[in-house]
Amino acid sequence: MAELLGDIGNDPVDMLLETNGGQTDPTEALVTLIQNVVPDFRVIVANAAKSNGTLLGLAANAIVMGATSELGPVEPFVNGIPCTILIKPEMAKQNFVLHQAGIYGLNQSKALAQKLLSAGMMKGRSPNDIQTAVQKLASRDVYFSHGAVISHQEAAALGLQIEYLPPDSELWQRIWLLYCMYDHDCRKARYLKVFEGRARSTAVAAPPVAKS
Image (cartoon, rainbow, N blue to C red; front, side, top):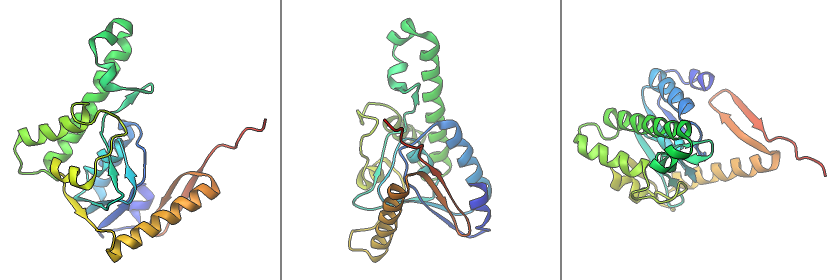
């Protein structure tokens, strides 16, 4: 990502993001990198940017979404278990270490979300408004599944800066075509990840299928 962003100079950056999410530590590192080198940052979500993908979107000035776009709750997982489950008192009795890891993991995501919103999309809003948005995004109070869909309407209602492009928008149709081409080529070539910028391109291949 440092090399991709290094090709940009001082120009604004639009990041087309498609991800199911990942760990909060590398997301925080990526956010720090972006904030250090990109003066004007916008995230485009054609299909889905879930979990820490949504958290990364909070670092942008705005998130571009369409009718197909999905954000999601930013609650992290530890050892494949949602942190909202790990923080339950019952878990402390079963596995105290995992329970504490869940508490720290959830607190990390909530603190990062609050920091990003306070300095960015929700700057100038009351601390209570920001805390309410973070609580909705990082708990099961509103979204009962980690994969719950947050549409452009719901994202805007949370207080996020959303730029909505309708299906008949020429710009949206170009974005959707680009996403579909990426999706087709990644499935065909069996790529797990693709990173492309102005002058650089790299991909991570899926492991080979084991022969029976």
